[in-house]
Length: 416
Ligand code: ADP
Ligand code: ASP
Ligand code: MG
Image 1 (cartoon, helix red, strand yellow):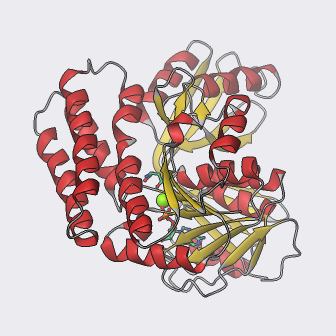
Image 2: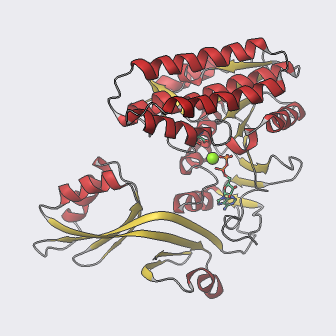
Image 3: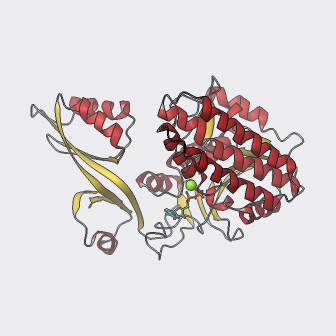
């Protein structure tokens, strides 16, 4: 069997869903089709959530816009489709009822209960359209099968609870295709969770691992994995083959084309990952697989925006490395802050992290008894793998370099 994953850009309108159906029809193997929310629905639901959390009733208008968007896609696909419309109506009513009655306690918890609806609506419509196109397919609620811990907004899979369920549900007995949601899961107690923004790629990889898929294909609006984001460097070229190791380095550095957690479950079972264009499905795209010699010979550029650099100094002038290091990183983990780069000298540690203000302020508070912490905000982290002097010049010219870190294969800059 094969796992296909369609992201928001591929299902942003009725034409996208017709295209998806064509791609699925052309595949003769058994398929699990993982689908994200339509277009920018997740962003729109985040706005609903924030407005609602602030007690502002205009969240209702925002939600109505999302409803009419889904309705118009559905009306275009099913001119006389009462049953789909009915399912969408029931689901929106359920969410509206929740928003009327819930206590608005914890932001992360509410986020998952509300924002997860995007994937429910998209899969209802996509699954119905595949059936309508004559395919032997079924809608499956992943929340009953993908069980996670209760770290809301950044949940991780509980393998023991999940594996048997996934195997028994996606069994292909009497079915060729399952349509299910990316990005969402549920705790053992049945509370909906989400796996982090862009998490649908990760869902596809988890399912592939458990079901021993032959391959995973993520369908994107680019011709494959390129040596830079084409929205940043417009002359970026496609990489034909990339090793798991290179792909992890790229995504961890901030290449926003695949969720960083995607690679591990695939690597562990040596399942190849194809990144292909949903606009030109016949083209080869990129394959990410076991160690392949680097053929492309191109520098690979990655930019991570909206970063903050914190410099931490022990107040008593003790060495930064050793015990201080472990105490500091324990605090980063406890505050849920992911570290993107570390540089240590004798008595100071510089750390580059995503700018999540609330978390960082409470971290600095906790550090303040023993350390002084100063920060630069509004910085970017630029990385180049397989760098050359020209490549470095290309992206650093005119920038103020706050930190530089070099190994044989890669170089990183924190710049302003
Ligand atoms: P999805 O529709 O699955 O959510 P994304 O929008 O997350 O897809 O990923 C596709 C986007 O990733 C592209 O439009 C491109 O701008 C961006 N991107 C960033 N880095 C790269 C890269 N190295 N190669 C290809 N695309 C990249
Ligand atoms: N819909 C979610 C998001 O936009 C998950 C995903 O698309 O992968 O982040
Ligand atoms: Mg995405």
